[in-house]
Image (cartoon, rainbow, N blue to C red; front, side, top):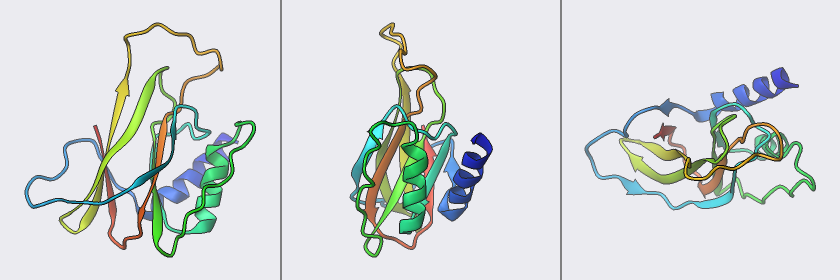
Length: 155
């Protein structure tokens, strides 16, 4: 199951992703891109750190099935009009309890879309994970469809 999930997630990663573990490129005026959250949380079925750009319904359906595996009841697939929209998703992978990942901004800069996400870990409280296993934080958003390459900056 893990190898099948890794292959499917890997196939999505080939679609349109690049990750930078640093600051976004400097210079030039960044144009903000509006986006809205489809779902955000700490318990995804995707336990591998990955960033994805989805531009087709079949890919979206497959990602949603992987993401919601083990969730009861399984939430319905959010509607996305892929003729006008696309989906950008960040998955932090297996992470310590209280880890969060949030897409903070998406901008057009230097001929590409730059999605900036922040991973945080709250050490202020001692809690026990009663659901078993590590958290798998994620943030999935929709935005206007674009032909520009998406670059992910994770801070």
